[in-house]
Amino acid sequence: MNELERVYEIAVSRTKSRIQTNIDTFLENNKELPSLEDYIAGNQEHLQSLWRQEWNQQVKTGFSNTFKRSYLEQKGIEATDMKRKTLHKQFMEEMKDDSPFDVVQWINSEFSNQKEKWKRRYESVQRRYQEKLERQEKARMERERQQKIQKLKEGILSKVSTIIESDRDLLYIRVRFAVAQKLADDRTINVAYAEMVSDEGAEEERIEHIYESFIQDDVMNSISSVLLERLTPSLQAEYKEVCGEDMTVSTLQDMAAYELSELEWTFRDEISEESLADLLNLARLSPSLEEQKVLYEQHKEEKERRRIEALAEVERKMKEEKRMIQDIFEREYDSSIHRNVQYQLHIGETNTGKTYQALERMKRSASGMYLAPLRLLALEVFEKLNEEGVSCNLKTGEEEKRWKGLPKPPVL
View (cartoon, helix red, strand yellow):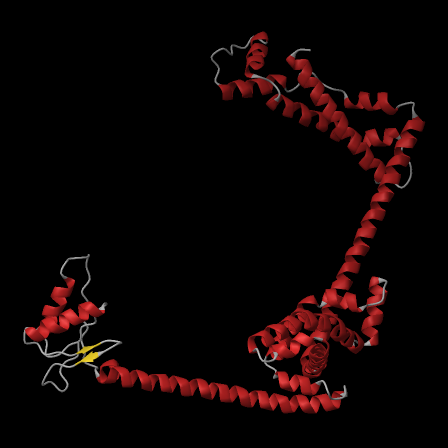
């Protein structure tokens, strides 16, 4: 098979494939079986254009330049020195109507005098078309169902968030009492636990371990059950209608995983601030919600009082530290009384005379302070300056030296 035959066969094959698709589209759009003649009469021009499109496309891309030159030479056209663009254009023009394909004749050869084959083709196309319509309808219904589910979930989450916000204290009281009972039981059954009470760090570690496991389980189960009970019957009925199943605790946990996780971390932080003694005393009370609520408010006030006292203690310590610094470094450390102090910064490589230049600059000043990085260097500078007649004192973290006869000379 030469190059022309090969390209021609490709164009014919692709044209036949496109015609088959066109026939199926035609049969698909007819509710009753049309005749072959009706198809050809209504599509003859379009069918011929399908062939021209495929043939032109293959002429553009399917032939080598060598074949193009050879073909034009056979047509009596000199193409040896023809530029590629001109060669391509000339070849397209000559090949435009070469090697035609009679599409109508081929269609007749496939279906003419074969009414049963044409009928089977129609029935097959209609069956596939109906299946496609059914799939599209199912997909549409599923999209609508998912949209309803999404809207319903948003409504449920909004309701859950409202319940958590409005009944947050009551939910926390439930968790708090459950943790208190867990702690009391653990102290009773664990002999080693009594020894841990004297070790504050071990106690906190033990309690923290209970938070990580028990609080998570309690929030994700008992609290989820409470939230499920608080959802309106109409909302639960709508969920069953849309999703085809009852809403369960597990279902709610999946939908409100983020909200429950946030609640868990919030409760864990609050439990960690509770007094161990308060929790153990709490476990001895009845599980009455009203009684627990009264005690919770009392403990809440005590917790706030402890917080204020802790802040006051921090402030007191800061003031004490400030006073100690002033006592140690006296007025030299207080920059507020030295608004006119000038700081001379000497920067350079090692052994470039920075220390010497700094000391010389300071000696020319009325007063000054030299900050030495090492005690030995500070002592050396102290002795050197005083020997040179520049009176100064020495102060380190270990000692303080005053030059003889100077009550308060410039500080070194």
